[in-house]
Length: 575
Ligand code: DGT
Ligand code: CA
Ligand code: CA
Ligand code: ZN
Image (cartoon, rainbow, N blue to C red; front, top):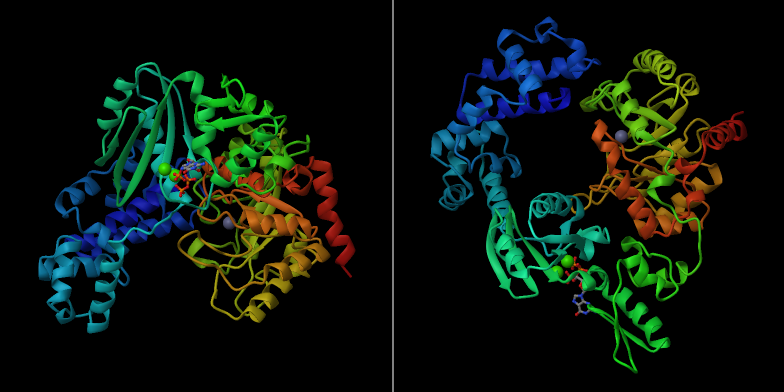
């Protein structure tokens, strides 16, 4: 485990101990140890012996070392065996932390959501110290609400389910090839169910393997060409699997990728050349002859089109757009990631580890942008610390000669509309991101005033996650996007497409409007660990959905062009 995972596990141990009703001093020791690691800018390997740190004793040090070396902890395993499995999920309910769940367990013998619901209905919960009638009512409301699955689930959640599903499909025998289809392949923000197409010469055997998968709550349909499963992922999640022969694979994949509106556009084009498209191939309307395709690229080529990426297939302008060979954006064109975190604030990896990961991705530049001091929960950097970090970044630049590492910051725009750093500090940084992380409920006018403080500042290069939304979880703050696009364009401030699938902020719709108004976009992962850099793919997928061109995206530019662009805002606006 890396440092961040260890910290999270220490917190998990503390919570389990609270539920189990263990000694408060012991619990506090785990939290203290996690805080000691949080304060440290070094990685676990660099720290060496955890006991050397203030706040870490013998017992917690042993746990940290075990987690670091083996990813496991006996203490946690024992707690997990001891605490009823239905209790930890109750932590998701409003107002319930480890201590309160512990009380429910120890005082009322509650062990899961069902027994908690009973206790609420019998008004037993309000009798406990620290709980009132209001708390009880809130818990009951939440319990009733969580039983219902929303019609559509956030893409980040479904991506996880899909990755597990695909890990299992890769183990199947007698499969020629398989692919994700449906709205998840199109990278819609929310997804109703998962769709797959599998090519095989032995459908019977594939069906058997599907029905034998782990975690199936129900086999919904079991036909020769289609098997539908319901998985239990906390919510019921349906998976439709189409089983086809290999010559029909490309057409089936296109058909079940959709969207329905995209199919309408394609059928019109087919009709004009006297053909019909179906899930088996393309049929000549006169002779009835069916043409099949090796892959989707060949399918689109049959209609004189470029290979339309799934993300763009929403039935809007894609069939016109992909007739011409434009500089459409692609993952290979990304030259760097301009929003990344390290152990200096709330990231899991060191500057060097992040730089190595960026080099492995073939990047020629990157920006290290840890949080600024206002964001205390993320161990935000004081101005003195960011300047010390700059020294380390300078060293890393000397060590790695195949990547340019910008020394940057993700600076908070504070609730009172002031920026978190002085001009003097900002001037010393290569890349300045401004972000809103607080006071989301302020009026639109107040939010705009906050954004103006950043937009009008000569050193601010980028506004990160411009709406603050979390898909399916949080709406974001009140900002008039067309106002923001106008201001970003006139001040030469770039706006972010945050590639984290929980965010995708700006959205595809917003992005299209932004570039139409002359805004420059930066697609960043906001990675808090080295593997996080891989989320760039979701940013590029969203960019394809928005029909962005490479030239509209800052971090596809060569280093020299990017650097002169960054100088420009400072020169034009600095007095
Ligand atoms: P969702 O609602 O998030 O599951 O969205 P999709 O697009 O994944 O919809 P789904 O799962 O009902 O179907 C997958 C694809 O299969 C859909 O995008 C297009 C194709 N498809 C399904 N039913 C029909 C239909 O009645 N007509 C046509 N033309 N295509 C269909
Ligand atoms: Ca679907
Ligand atoms: Ca479906
Ligand atoms: Zn960030």
